[in-house]
Structures are given as C-alpha cells and as structure tokens.
Amino acid sequence: MLSIQRSLFASLSKSDERIAAAVALYKRERITLGDAARLAGVDRWTMRDILREHGVKLRLGLVDEDDAAYEGEAASELGFDDEDSDDEEPRAK
Image (cartoon, rainbow, N blue to C red):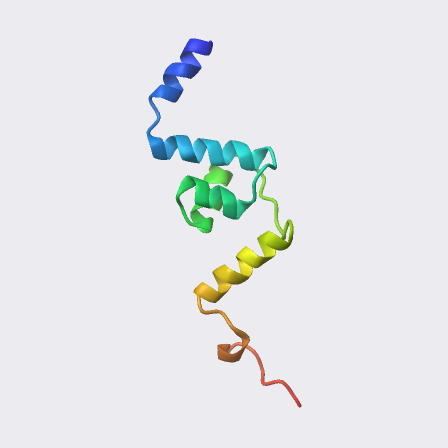
C-alpha cells in the first residue's frame, strides 16, 4: 500500500503536489483559504472549487488580524471601496 502511495505521489506534477499540500493543510485547519490559494498557486475562487471537489468543508469568516488584513488588501487591489459603489443609496447627513 505504501509503495502505491509513493508511486502515485511521484507521478504528481509540482503544481499537483502544491494543490495536494494546500488541500491537506486546509483540511487540517493549519492554513486559511488565502494561504491555501497562495500555496497552490491559484486564486481564492479556484481554491474554493478545488476544496469542494475534494469534499473539504469551507471555513468561512476571518481567522485572525492577519487574515483580516489580507482580506482588506485583496479588496483594495480589486478596487472595492465605499465611495465608488453604485449599489447603495446615498447616506443621509
């Protein structure tokens, strides 16, 4: 059985190895979704899909201040800010 696992692992490409490691670490709650995505070399949406394909339940919400800071930076890079939003009614003063 161990030799089968080794040969299977040996046949994985480097990107597959990174994805497998990211899935395993996320599943064990060792890393966040953002960390898993960076490790796997994919964006967060793709990582969510990968985790779902592997039957891993997503953990939602911020884990700590570092995770919150990362989320804020990601939103800034995407250009999300309250002033440009057309979805909201103007606030009363």
